[in-house]
Length: 590
Image (tube, rainbow, N blue to C red; front, side):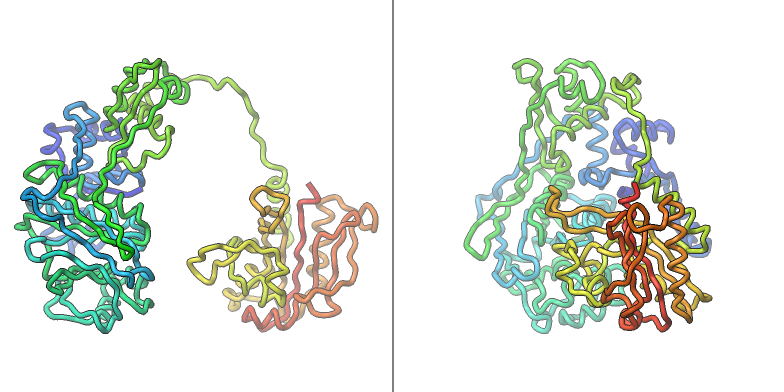
């Protein structure tokens, strides 16, 4: 959950009321928030960096408030105060309005060129006119952008926000992409101009910006925004230009959001303008801006879209466990910034979803807000109408029992990743990827996590490779699920619980692995035998050394293999000594 830090005195001044710490903690709980910590800048520095670093730091009391991750409208002081005042019925939820330029002139225009398609193809924009900043408002404005970047913008990978002093630049603006060597400008907080390539080198040591370089540094073209005079506004998602930086004296702000996800960009823009339009001469109004796409389409932003949902009072009463009239429920929802009224047809309630509540996507979200406004502590405790007896799944119970006994046998349990690379389950095991029945990840973020594992063996061998300096022998096991394609399942795949163990030493230790098999079968009460028991017979498997592999059968069905691993497999996992392994399916023993 995101944590919002606000100065206590500033918060109480905005709320128009003072609270004790206990009273404010209770208010937060009633509103669905949590007062996580009461501290100060000085206390934080003493705790994190020591007393010397804290000299001269502020003693102003800070409230650290945990906010639900999808409540983007509560990530700043302005949104928090607005939400609490509406909740306490001291204020009506404002209506946000998009307006045309006051002087009848043309709206600001942002033109997107086709070169951006390969890097960040989307952009939205808006203007805040005649805004008045104080030091606290300015700091809150910057803080909100950072909170949004870390939250809905996914560390700028999905959306990057740029804010500019409109009086220092002139439209129309052009959003394009160019080779790094052709981009040159003076970035924020720097004294000279740099090329884009130089900036990427400069920011590799920057504690803040270095985390965003990977987003575009390997791209042949970098996104860039110019005004009509060729002045650089920003190089998203890295840095803004120094020329258009905002300050306490800024009166008109041009806001642009470039993105790989248009929906997230619209939400982000709506959040910024709705939170800070309160400081405009005409509160809660936002001047529109036009965005022209490469195909000639023209869109006007911000959308500030309102929508209406209709649901019954009975729906909410049954799911929350209360018995309120439709009028009472409508009043509860209105306190949560969801203007509501009874439609006049039975107990149907029409709920208006404002642009600040992007978290409301389903009737259940509305029901949750009604429960919060009613008060969780006010819901009468009741006994469920249906009774169930919880019990452990048989496969998990068997797994736990086997884990205990394999540990008693001298093996150490490992827990490895459920995802791995194609190479791990195919080439390194001397198999063809098409034969593995592997489920592939459609958009893997890294080459290490391309497929769901079809075998536990690669994970154990990688664990041994990472612990080669440990005393020999290394005896590891894992009992976990693998994922296999299965056309008979509605999702096209199924989980399969398997047991895998490896023995790594100067000698292969086949007898150790064979003995482990016998112990497992003894625990499962399966006798040696060809029909109703278990047996092994010689087999060929490319993962194992020829002539040193056996297939395991139980009650006439194959359940796995054991043997000495092939030298090629050993070397491909960067190991130097022989290794024996067993890999069996334990589901037939349930």
